[in-house]
Image 1: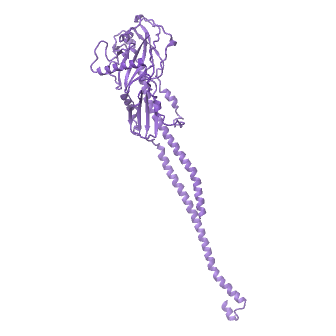
Image 2: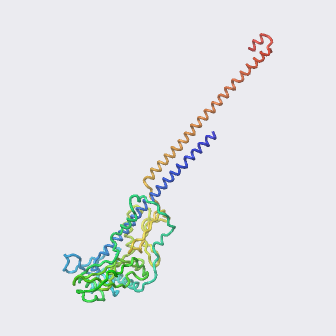
Image 3: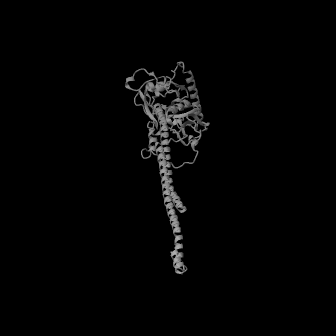
Length: 451
């Protein structure tokens, strides 16, 4: 019986090892799939945020240079020859995170479409105009001094552990994630462009500055070697980090196409952090060798709050995850906003540094848990049923073998008992027969008695 128990236990272990490995690999694969699914949707959220940044850049880069005046001349033949109309930038921005728009002139002077030249600041805009004016002064100072103080790279924040080989995601048979990231930036202006403006637009643009256009604007003649136009540096200026990307390079302009129109060169949008809560997004506009910088000021805290509310807070992931949006400043990494729940020990983390010109911003998404797949419950039930059947099967085999062995032992005991019961009378019979053979009886009567 002991030997049978030993054999059954050995057979049980031989079957348990491969089955246990199979169950482990099944749960491990399911966990990887759940992690890949979480990564996929987390990256989708960050992609949506980055796409909004790209759309913002595209909308601002598409603005006419004339829109940065209090009045402007819209494009199209329907408006040709008519009086200028109020600029769309002359009122309060619908985007609460935009403080306001202004133009930095070649001589460093300041102009904003919120006020008309020679007129007082409208009621309700005084504080905004004053802050824009101070930001213009800070911009001039940093552009002139070219401070060597640099901000730490945002990517250094998340290098907590050595890089590991990326696990294949569940989306790989269907999507190429690398191509998706490239496709997320369809409208980015990647190099300087040339735009044609009218005589009136040029006059309105230059009238805001004490610097004068060279010659008569109605017959402007300038020269430009198209191969010598400097490309903008794809590097964000952080708190006066090094020489600004818009250093005083004054390229020539292409020849005017007519006596009433000529061309200006417009660079892609750039950025400069003015303070821990203000960023100046601007473009260089080169006209007659003079560089104008047109842009808008972003309030970082409301901007980050808007991005989190629009793309993260409304999703179920906010119930078990947190989104941190950080900015790189001269004082280090500054947490601009935090949304979601507090995650002390994240089991999953995803970091993204946004593309130029928002590369001073980064987002970090931490999750306290990884949502279980709907298949996990089914797998749990099947594992319980399998283990139960497996255990019951071995128990049935053990009980069957034990019953057979018990019957065998009972048969052996029965045969031994019967043999013992028959052996005693047979011995007595044989003894009397031996006595009779030896003639011990003596008389026929006694012999008959023995019989």
